[in-house]
Amino acid sequence: MAEGSGVTAESLEQTIREKLDATHVTVVDNSGGCGQIFEAVIVSAQFEGKTSLAKSRLVNTALKEEIAKVHAWSNKTYTPAQWEKVKGAEAAGGV
Image 1 (cartoon, helix red, strand yellow):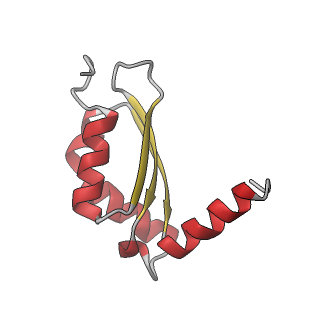
Image 2 (cartoon, rainbow, N blue to C red):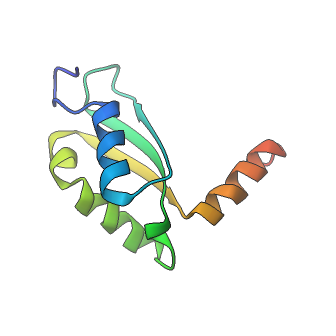
């Protein structure tokens, strides 16, 4: 468990899956294990029809307690359809 914040990549992933009904979540601890800097990729149908700002607000509201405990948090949010396009571009070497 991270010593600094008590927040782990695993705990963030679980909370995201539960609160956002995410179908894909990748959380990376970029702080060297101290639990202070995280980035995530989140795929959820709850993002359908929302602007980037609205998606970000949805995530930040869902993770309000966790985000308050860490130094830095960043995320990329996708709908399932957007995620399929991203994966397709990566497979084709475009991303």
